[in-house]
Image 1 (cartoon, one colour):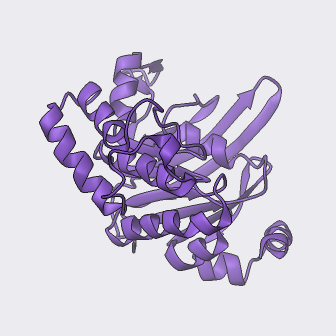
Image 2: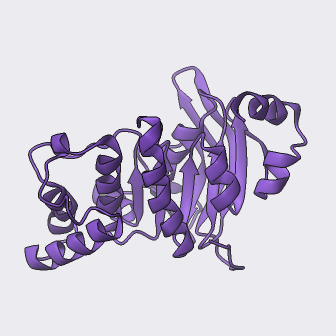
Length: 260
């Protein structure tokens, strides 16, 4: 969980801007996440948190600025004159395969069992044999506590179980970093804990994570780095104790007073 000093950040976002038509959602966001670090991003609805996350793995294309993953520029190549050229979709897909993402909604294939859901991308994208993909899927489903649910279809699983399958599916791609976009917000309150427990286990194992969430307790317990966003900018960031217990900015104080 503890970030280690490293010359090259795992994530380096520089002056990220994102426009949707006339709507300026990200307004010059800078963010650095070191290898092994857990970064929790907080903020009200519409603050740009989820858009930032989607720009980190090229689901959205930045209007301006850049994202580097372990030193590699995402989405573009730079020529000798310093001009940027958009990469071919195949190259972008290869970059994206280094990044695991878990969404608010689970997006499981309803006609596949939990085991088949975790195997599918391994076979189709990584070109693993079905045998190797199955071994990996079984291992990961056991890790997220679903050893007895492997042959169940999504409709036979609770929301918390479906989300744990989605986490296993993302981990099956051997990502260098995991992104979580409000992974517990669609769950009934009694199911939240089982998903957070899996995420805590990942953090303890040294997985680099960027987590958009309203779970302040998770941020306090697991995060190395807390970022508070509002209106498309980073208002305040730092260690959990600093941001959550002694915020400097009035916008941060106001937000926390409503969620704590």
